[in-house]
Image 1 (cartoon, rainbow over the protein chains, first blue to last red):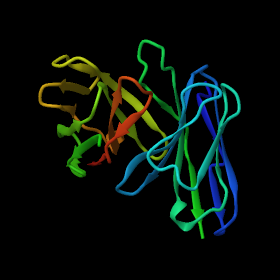
Image 2 (image 1 turned 180 degrees about the vertical axis):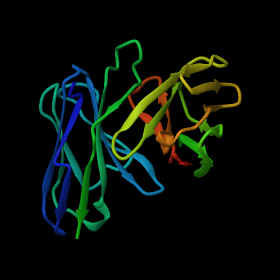
Image 3 (image 1 turned 60 degrees about the horizontal axis):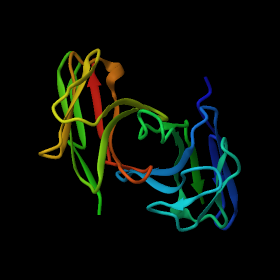
Length: 115
Length: 111
């Protein structure tokens, strides 16, 4: 019963460094999402992928890139990290064509600090 | 611009009390309203509501949607310390796969 798995759980970067956050789901879901969560801001969508091979920008895409590697995996890349990207990042997935298409299931999150 | 507003921002009550959390929305192409509970880590799904006036219930938690007045409430009766969490409201849309989230209500239950 893994669900949505994110790695790493914690990461500290220096300004200008790059890194990739990994996400994998084992529920055979079509859609996958990356969010960031900051105090007082709720969950804000960075990018999403409605199906394998497609990606679209969300509310706050600047400074990020994504890759939908296959149906299971959706990665988020920070090319040149900035302190403003210090946040908790969540990956989620959903079965859009199912009976309850809007229910998203979340990973445990990655806490990222950029110094 | 789609908007989901939750109130209150935070709430502190004693164990055994009943609480009501509010969520109002202004969105295009409304499809569903969802409630999530977030403790230390991942938000976990509680309810999804699509029809107005029909209560969803799970144990001590219940929720109802009013599509005319554009709001939903989440009730928790006989609260326990394990109910302490941030409760998130989100709205799903027809035509895309996105959810629009509110900022959440932080509920603290004092023993």
